[in-house]
Image 1 (tube, rainbow, N blue to C red):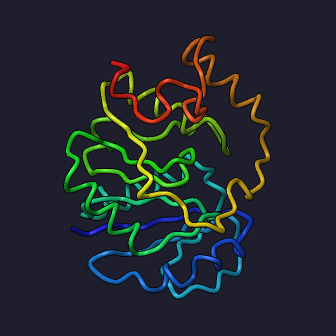
Image 2 (image 1 turned 90 degrees about the vertical axis):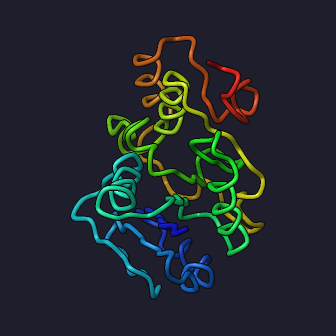
Length: 210
């Protein structure tokens, strides 16, 4: 089973360097791909795609979905934030979850959407992330709500959690959360709750929400 491991980065190349040992040791049939949205000096011996413009979070995630499942033929896509630390046991856990849990479409860690593991069929069953949530924030809430509406399942697993030392949410967000929240409520209605709120009954999984 081949996995494409991907990371979008905008302004914190130093965060990527903290995951250097893991990223440079990933071998075929798996592959690592970094999308540089900020024209940074990235000192890693892995493939790096340089974007002419900042694609934002949704646009970057969509780029990786196409790389994995349209232009590529991977069995799974691992999306990592640039501010987390991961390792090979977690990569193997992702592979095992894809194999052993056919009831789950999207595998998440217990921190927002900082780690996602997608199946190829997600692209056709769920679609792309909504790029109107540019450059960042609420795109993950929107995707989870879309999945719930379509009857597709996401679930969180501690086996995928970031390692100690990860620096969550260290990349700057140029757009206020409130502005993106307005887009979310306009699309889904005023009663919608953030899917990443641990108090949300659908935080761990949306299996019972259909």
